[in-house]
Length: 519
Image 1 (spheres, rainbow, N blue to C red):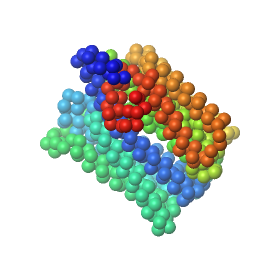
Image 2 (cartoon, one colour):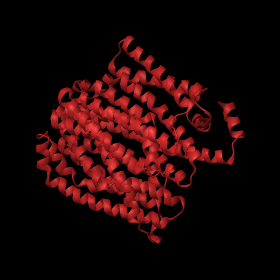
Image 3 (spheres, rainbow, N blue to C red):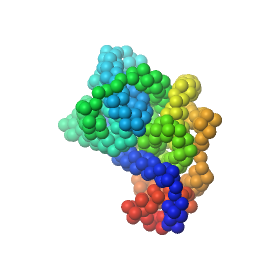
Image 4 (spheres, helix red, strand yellow):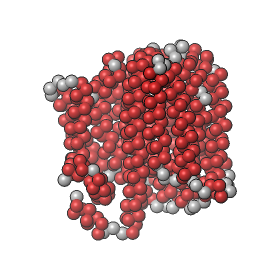
């Protein structure tokens, strides 16, 4: 590796040095976001375990179903403006047009804030109707009545943090959304439970955490643009809405792809099954956090490079980012699939019934990670309408599959329907990126990493199923450590390419364990 790094440095041109700088920027931003999400995932998982013990599977199902409705309402109130803000802030910051940056962010905050208030009132006033629609699931009505005032707060938080992401500053999203939010939420739940509050305490903790994080997000927005008081905003509402509205429909339909199964499961099946399936979904989505960590910083880079017609550099970054996403996603998929029973047993014996569903959804998320940022490659290069059409078609497929499979197979049918739809959408966008942009996310190193991951997965599967039977919790600790270390040792030895040399040398200099693995 040292020889390859030396040769790589000696032959760098000015363009490759610029590419190197952008790779480091993406890695640094994605790394901050990723480790923030690791922290968030840890606390969210502890949080799920805690509230599953406090509420039980049935009331947990009602709470999580209500939370899904509230998040859906908050999504509507954002109107896709958060994605539009990322695109335009990145574009205007590149040419130092701070007047337009201020205008975009200000209008997005005003529009989403007003929409949030209106939608919150509609949700609150229709709590009884919604409860009846879901057959009076335990705790559902109470949840949406108390949580509806948080809808505008959630929207404003997303807009404020999206503005900082557009400026390519990822640490504020990490501090607010991935560290403060789960930490305050879990702490408040435990504190209120100490006073004997169960569902009331869980709901109140959610409100407290979002009030805290919304205030913090605005503080971070002020730190990102400290000279705004001296800038007169230039408003271009038409341009903002022309990008945001198609993307809003895309995000809306993507939410449908993710949560149609939960909503339809809540309509057709018991509250307990909804509770178990929600835990399964949240577990499988841990794989997608790797891709979203890179997307958060890569999306404005796509917009920036495309606007400057740097397509060759964009393709190089696309390949590298996709490979990095796969490198981190493969071990997560292997652990989640081979140890599905062990993971779900943490929540209680009833939750183990969701193991097969977890394996299906984990595979779908691996495919999602394996094709990289194909959705953003289309959306950030002016193909919003095509992304919308894709998502709409697959959304209809998803609804149809869920409607057919859930009444017969329950949560296994829901997982099959949503997993199939997720895979189809990603393959469709992969083909379109290749045909329209003449860009592919795959490189020779990508397939080498895939082969290494498959070998380690098979070894892990054989040890788990044909090796000695150990304590479930012991296996959950021991096997991931052994096989993650093995995978990354193999990657450092045979899977890393020249574009990883600089990053790996930086990591090795700081992390003794990785230095020892890579030799």
